[in-house]
Length: 133
Length: 398
Image 1 (tube, rainbow over the protein chains, first blue to last red):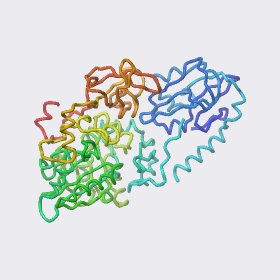
Image 2: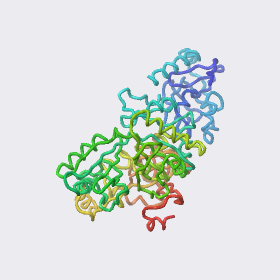
Image 3: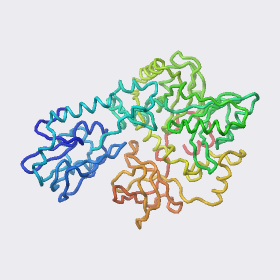
Image 4: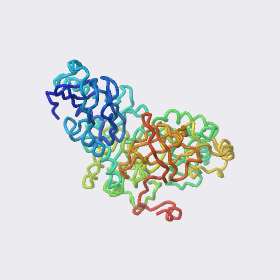
């Protein structure tokens, strides 16, 4: 699956799609593949303040619980309600319909510290090499 | 998200390790073994689970250990040794029969659970868990010293494949001259499998489904060849390679204990509810005296099945509370159940809270989510095809 070139990425496998000071946040295709079938998602309520690098929510597969870390700081303005009944959207469309939350940025400069698509693809290619070593 | 466990370089590998990697399995370190947890390229955990419930799947369980105990200079020494170190009554086994049992510490808690196979007149094979292999073999050697028997560890001699599911019998029958229809549940035979002579074929498993476990020579070429033939024979039935993830959800639905979870060196037989595999009347065995005392002292906790009523998945180690919010127990295993479409768990709670329907609150990331005690096993297969070893007792439950 291609990594959209207009998104920014974290080393914890979240993506950010910024439109002005509102960003949409999700997990990457690599992340959903590592997790396996997603069966449960727990997201913050609108109004929740989140801090870059701190836990934003939880995604669970049959096998495992994984924390999602906020890629940026700000206030949650919307959580993807569809995921409550159809968490599998995270597997089928991780960069689109499987988005998690929308956040109003507190500090737009944080975006600059995130990876672009090329850097992220190089990052996960390295991880794949490690795993098969 | 957190990165998945990366395999430790020092992890042990089964003879099928390279094959799992060729199949692009997701690998994890399980009790020191580099094992496949699921095979995403053929559908992953849930598809594997459903294949076993609905048709057939195959697992590499070569990490399991095998200990043979046979006669020394005279007959009887092996049986006496097995009786001493395990809680079920091995004297009741016919040649070709197996049973679930456990080795206990003097405290009545678990060294490990085992399947005991009676191979011959005074000749037994104990199949043990991977994570407890060295501890178990040391325990067996130590505690059988005074018996006239020979203890051999055969763990590395076998590649063990579990072919599981209602159609497992059809798949394996294509590959063997043994008449599988005549092997009852928890019995075994020796036959030619894939041209290999004298292969142990047991109607056993850890999925709550009908199925077989076969023990083939552990060289890589033979192991891969047998795997390939099983896959080929099962193709028309939609056979899938299955990993430890599905193995865990399948055994949990069937309420089969996992060492380190439902049973451990801290948990005794009565607490684990394994009374029917513990034969107090057979004579002395390690742990018996403590179990006598524990029985008269009464239980302080008991294993129950839980079903989540509110949203959330109970996981291993999560705290259980009563309505007032007081901690009363712990989840030993918890997962979504692919068969039932519910979130289920096993937990230790006080006997007073073990009645069906009792509300139990599971602490999930500092929130309390409501669950209730439900009957177990969560899943019980319809027993149509496999003839039963104890037909009279199972007939009532069909």
